[in-house]
Length: 635
Image 1 (tube, rainbow, N blue to C red):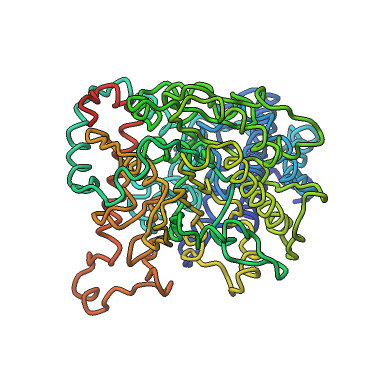
Image 2: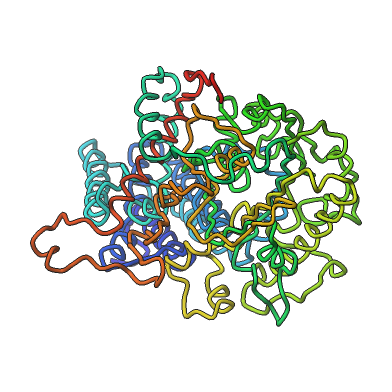
């Protein structure tokens, strides 16, 4: 038979082409960690299974032209979805979720960042689409199929058999894959990107109905857990040390702890923040972790104000802005505090204008409150130095005591900075992102130092406590090769990756004289109870998952949104339990393992508590459960 007469259905050709392309992206573009041959096998077969499931639907279309049109546009839409995830992954090392598609108001601000993530060779993703398009038009007669009903049913049945086989292997490799789906990489690795999106749609639909069926009966179990496992019984020694003082909270964009007391090109990266680590009026927490997920800066705000965990999908600021909360600004209002946020960006970004109302924040000073020009702005907007300078007049006009948050912008991906503003040279590695990170961090450090002087000149310094917190990571796992070079490591292991989630946290209390470096494991979930304690607010009836950082009664671990955690002794990451001090995996006793296949690893007891806490926090948010709670008898 001549090759040109060989009749291969176009849906088979499309399946093979699309499957090969998707596997190449999985294997060589996404940084998916493969630990064994089973994971290799599953990763290889799932793009073909997903492609066959969708393209095989074309056999049910009777009209030839419509069958071809279905295959053309299905390939195009699938490729667009793959491309969108690829661009998103380059920035966040994560996959898109349905809630993020509703964050359209952020699009204008993200344009520059998105363009920097698109590569010229991305056009290769559309080669198979062009081939399918060509074949569907030039060889329509030869590549169209008209199966009898039995053939159609057989094709559909084969699709489901292949899908079931994929899911069976996935469940063997990762038991309880769908019930413990905190980690999207595990879902994509085991069931494929497109099946993951189907799962995400189902999960989103379920979450949307949760509020409708919530009736408050969930509250007693959550309260009981918090009372028994989270809340401290005794006040810390620093309770009320900052009573009636102003709180000035600096949300330091993308600042990670690895730059503190470190150098690049022989120069200090953060000389001012370094000096604060030794300042007698400052507490510096060197093992403080950000706990954000897809909401990034908005997640950090949510965690800080509520001591709740962010959602695993999307940003709470978008998905649940209309909920009732018991946020810190609302609590402080009962203590006579005025609350505000200052951020030289538009009010709709991260849906702040709506969410701040739910938090009880009195005023939001957005970009319209600032004089922004080409000279004093770059990248995401107003540079940090003019931002702090222009903010002073607003702080001076506020009724005291006040609780105000200032959100910086300059140290934001892609870390652009004018040459005249650079005090140190960029790093030299294969990653422009990491290279440019250091000069923008130094610029922010200088801006914060100037702000301290401006507060003193304005007469606000002595009667305030100043908080500085990195909101989330700046350098994602996509830059691990460059990071390993900078940190002088052979590679960045899952243990190292978790350690890189540490962000600086400073509590500066002028005139206090008892500051120190604190080494205990801590995180953003702890900020709310800590600040309220320092301000002398007991807040007995609150529902929260953090601890006062100055209390001796702490739960001893910090949970990350994907189910990983850091405890006093261990770090749990990528399904591996590590010794926190050495970074070495903790081995299960082989004798015990031989006699009991269900023996727990050292991390399992805390892992179970982490899963429970994340679930309870989700219940509070998805069910809007605070509407059923009366927060009376605040003191």
